[in-house]
Amino acid sequence: MRRRVIGLDSLDELAEPTKRVAEAPRESAGHTEFEFELPRGYVDADGVVHRHGRMRLATARDELRPQIDLRVKENPGYLSVLLLSTVITELGDVEEVNVGVVERMFATDIAFLQDFYRRINSEGHTRAGVTCPSCGGAFEVDLAGGRLGES
Image (cartoon, rainbow, N blue to C red):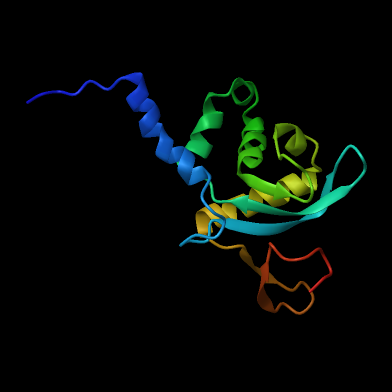
């Protein structure tokens, strides 16, 4: 049996399909991106508030890559900042959602995005069961929906 030696060029070719997956269209056979509305919104350097965004499903690579980042090794809480900056594909008119953008978000919005991430990646949807504190009635709400108080 002959063994084939794989050179560096071949390894790059093996990695190529991963690049193509990341550039896949928004609407494919499966729903891979989900819209959201931040409770407070990201305020950019010009004072413009950005609330509406899109988050894509995470890949194994997305979850593994931050594990080797020195910032995460020094502060494990930084994992979510790196992960969110990777999977948020749009945020209002912000040109690029990067670590700096996520770092400057309000804690309320980070908590919302962490829960949203968990829901779409673990449960496959953005709905949550809730109970009315007044009447005790149970119903579902869509976490991706409009701002508080809107229907």
